[in-house]
Length: 454
Image 1 (tube, rainbow, N blue to C red):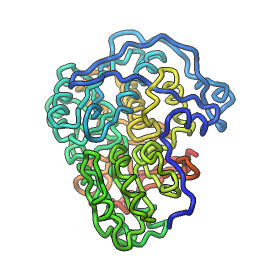
Image 2 (tube, helix red, strand yellow):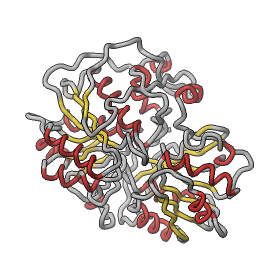
Image 3 (spheres, one colour):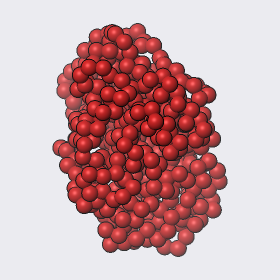
């Protein structure tokens, strides 16, 4: 099933992305918090010269270099939030989340703030451990954060009980993965995890895969039942699941297990750092199996040096490519506030955090009276999010628990997926609209995924 020529993923360093996007300017940010379980907030930076922005399909104003967003200083009492993720850890790392939180704070505070008030976004490194993640949650409650926004960790079950006790929302995150994140009434994910795994199964079947094997990073076992539902609905099965240890290492044994026999496709739920370790062993194996992996993890950085090996491989995710019009302000903010060029922002973590904060802003700006953790939690229960081209229309009053979803996934709201593929050294969009996977995942009702975005 492999093509004879191969290419490399998206989510590359900014110079390559700039080349791919022509006049788009895409830069990056310095981390808000370097280490330890403590959080930090960043002061708004002084405005600098506007970078080039927009894309060829955008308006003339955008293509000349401006998003059109008027700058105005936010004033008044800050709105405090917390964002946590794993940065300083031997396991998967998500510094792009930390970077995006700071970039968003800088951007929104120079563009009128949230309901006219400045955002004080604090960051906490969860270090990849339940103990540190719990410490972040306690800090958010102690600091009276209105919500924790745009987070990801594999140890969410250590966080949720603390936030529940503190009546604090876990809001907007891309990638709910733990049982409590998927069921707790304080959890409001905007991303579709684990449903992009369902999308990968669907795409593999569409592409003619006959012998499918799942490869799952330790901690992501929640994907398996929905992927099995999808395979059954598509008239096939996943022949086995191979688990990867979360700490990157020599994966030769796991590659051999996954590719043995007649395997012709690998549906993979694997983070970027383990992917980097996976690629040499996979290339050495000589397998021709097509890989189907997640947005922002199966990316250009992960396959560097193995471009020919991944030609034609597929990427499934939650968010349209960063080159599309909806992300114009995000691209401009990354450039203006000098985000870290080593990070992948065309990703679940990057775009997911930006979308989460945009969703948070929409909820706050519908509220009347005091804005605190309890009033925000109440408002979030019936909030409607309208971010065309970033996420489908989302109504938290109609989450999957209320619209026919399988038990254990009640808090999922977004059930629509998008695709990209590796071609000639680049990851290129393969979707022009969101695709609903509700029913093949085990749900009973479809979702309105909104208009095309391509």
